[in-house]
Image (cartoon, rainbow, N blue to C red; front, side):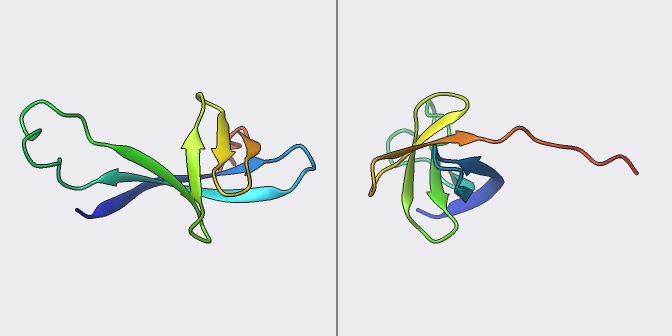
Length: 78
């Protein structure tokens, strides 16, 4: 099964460090689940560490057990 990058965002931990988080979706559903399953979304840091989604804005760095918070998106008008 291959995963496709569908988004990315920045998040900060309590000490102010910024992490680049990548959002992936499976390109093909798992065998046997083809008709009924939604694509599975996973998250990873740009360096490859696994990230678990806790809610819409909070995520957990699995290896270090650190909670990070998604930064609000800022738009630049042209």
